[in-house]
Amino acid sequence: MIRIGTRKSNLAVAQAKIVKNILENLSYKVKLVRKSSLGDQDLVSPLSSFRGQSAFTRSIERLLLRKEVDLAVHSLKDLGLDGLEDLEILTVLQRHSPNDLLLIKADKVISTSPLLMKDQTRIGTGSVRRQAELRAMDQGIIPIDIRGNIETRISQLKEEHLDGIILAQAVFERMSPFVPGGILKIPLPIDYFPTSPGQGAIAIQVRKGEFRELMEIGDSNTLKSVSLERDLLAEFGEGCDNGVGITITRKEGVWHLYSFFMDLGYRYVHLIAESLEELRTTFLEALPNSLRSNAKTFPFNDKVGVIFTDRKTGLRYKQILASVTSRVFIVPVFRYEVHYTLLEDKKLKEHWEACDWVILTSKQAIPFLSALTAYHPRTAFKLAVVGGRTAELLRELGFPVHIVAARGANELNQLLLKKGGRKIYLSGERVSQKFEETMRFTVYKTINRKLQRIPEVDFAVVFSNKSAEHVLNSLGNSFSKNWIAIGRRTANYLRGRGIDAINCDSPTPQGVITALTKEEIQ
Image 1 (tube, rainbow, N blue to C red):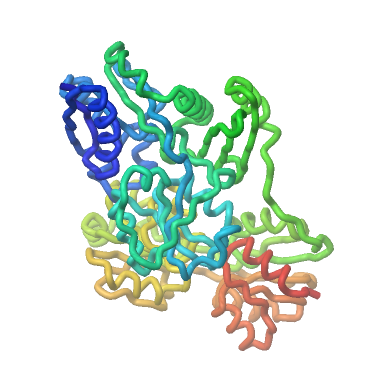
Image 2 (cartoon, rainbow, N blue to C red):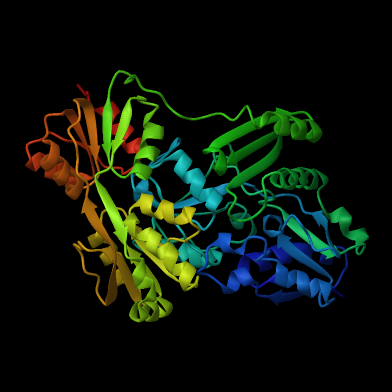
């Protein structure tokens, strides 16, 4: 009798049954032993918080070490690079598809080839790599952090705050989960969505030196290619939060390597070689110098623009707007005072430790939230925010984001009405929306900066009604030939002040570039 250790999820059991059937066809008697993993038990904390813990495999590996099972079956991508000393990967089955698959509401898709989605489409995935690849493809997409087994994630497509999810395509080659009507299945091209090393491969793990006779059930080409993927991943550091995708495939007698690197500015490498060793050498030699950029350029180099925002946001916009013109400068409109003394407030501490949801409608509350988690540590809470940029900043600090409203606090309030649990709202002094059954704490104060007169510019970018009001009251409107407003409300405010504003629906640098290219700026 061979005892196979596996996680309890339907997908993990389906994978284990594939191995079970192979062994039974070889006349072995087989029994499955199921056990939950840390990653199955904690469905709130971000995947990045499990880095180095082998969250989805360690409990099964312990069964193997204690000789409670004879071999373990894993998704190879879940196995850490530094294996336990007394265990080894015996072999890997022939790989299913390594690709990712997008499940998305049909009314959110403009085109499937090329893939184009409506602005502010919200795609659920807990993978930092998948989130970064989505943003690299389209800055108008809003990633949403979700966790849970396959069925749980698919069921969330029924909710208003989620338009789509990303799964491994191999899921549908191993099982047949129910997908609601009106949902499209769109395979994501591997050249723009390289996947986690080992994705699509089923690994068989044993105690060292045991079951050598079972090596023959594996696939040698799969083992070679996924082993190289994992070796190359080691050059960047493993983990759920490193934002690296590396996929190697074999087509028409040659090897192809597709890779993506979040930390290198959303960059891609695609190499072709006749041997895996040549692929390894070429990749490591070429990596520092042959990363290609997908930045577009536009003929506006003679224009001068001003961005009215804080320095950090302004630098981000200026860097990307350099593809339009390098003649852009930043004028901060406000400064913010964070009320860190509230960290000692007993009422805040009490509600913080008991809450299920934390609500932020501005990125200015992020420094306080960061300090709050440092002084009173906890991880099992969910975040609901306004704006894709706020969500992006939170993820950079390691926070998961579970609901993102694209169109303001009213939309966020409507999405939260259907969510149970206790909520706290970390806000500024000026609050336009009160959230029902929510404890609010004022954690920062907004102070207008004194603005000095500036020379005439070709275009000015403003981000909010409040910002536009302060700029116009301080400087007037004659210094800029064109005004670009982030969002319809800001555009309507400017129009109410007699300015023919260009509306930028997407609150991103790419959105500003789109607005510039659609309009004939003077």
